[in-house]
Image (cartoon, rainbow over all chains, first blue to last red; front, side, top):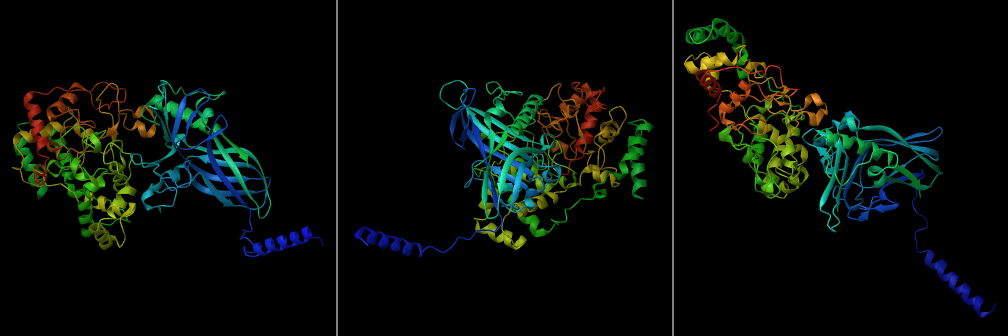
Length: 260
Length: 329
């Protein structure tokens, strides 16, 4: 044994010695886990709350809020159907958001192959009639989410707010606000294709992208002109309602799933 | 016996003022008008108690429940005006104005639904609206609870009443309990239907006959002990509405411009009138109905105009003023 081999053996022994101080194993749940992570994207880039971005129609924008209710969230395989949640409140602001809700949720699921995620955008009428004051703060239907339409005793399904520079003065001086709700704007059981082969002990993340440009400037649908209709609520008048319907339908179609 | 006395008093006083047909019509309607005939629905999870009402009253006048601690519920619901306001649109925080006229909350516990379009199903949930509204108190229920729980007085008060801190549940229930306790059914009109024939003037009796007459048909919508049928109707205020009322909820064009029929009790105190406070006086209100509205497509069919002499108009106003419970002063 020459000197270099001796040194190598000593170093390896030291490394093994260090390793022995680390706990011998990590606690791993037996069942596989899937994480749903929701993102707003524009032209392939993820947009976080507060980000400045330029959309496909060259509008300079900054995102203020994106929150939405999803209900009856189900993963479907050839023979498996696994319900992930009755209802979730997704807040794109993510962990540490003012509401306390998140953009990412994880679920324990049976191992297997899944090819579809099915979910409803908004709340079915029975959940939409919930009394939020009786719900614990951690519940997505509590007042904590700041998604309750107190004048209607119903929930806002999608709340998207941004600021826009419509006159190229480098100031985001106009608001875009879509607060859509009421039973008529509930979109039930929308299915999204995916490929998820998840064995035991595994964890996989599904990125659910909501594409800004497909909401406002879809190639194959009705567009929303941000220069002339910068501010909308769901139901102030018929024009606003019409825009809210387009917004909701485009929003549903803008969603796609990619696996990490 | 009461009914007989009432019958005699009405016939005696009003026979010369109105036709027999009109008097008979009033007599058919008038017997069930006592507020005591009403039953208030109390939610199972919020029974009334004196301590809860006291806590609710304290909260009602608590400015800490507005964002800048400048206004309370009581700022827009003034006791001396039957818990309504005297301006068309009340001041909210930060120089903002409420979107609608502040309604009276006297007898609010008898209402089957709340807010001008009737979209709120319980008084407990109605409490949330002004707290959350950016043009009104603009604080939010969650933040309101956080504030209250930092004040030792309220920490103690909530614990004594609820055995709990201020939460969305305990806060809304306390305020709703107080509002349910505000009942007003002691007006000259009530004394009159209780048998005191001198409680209201001869002119007011004549006005009452007009109110219930086929010619004016005010009681098509303003019926029952609270002089409202609680329905949501279009009363022809405008040919086109800025605030579309019930349409906001149903999105049905046939619901455009529909608002809750208000109670006429204490009407002399609850000026200005209509959901946007556009009419300052009862005189203007009567003129609107006499014109037959502004011909909105959804306008209620009963609003089709009528003619009144000046004297009849004054008599009608005398009757409306007799609906005032003078304890709210």
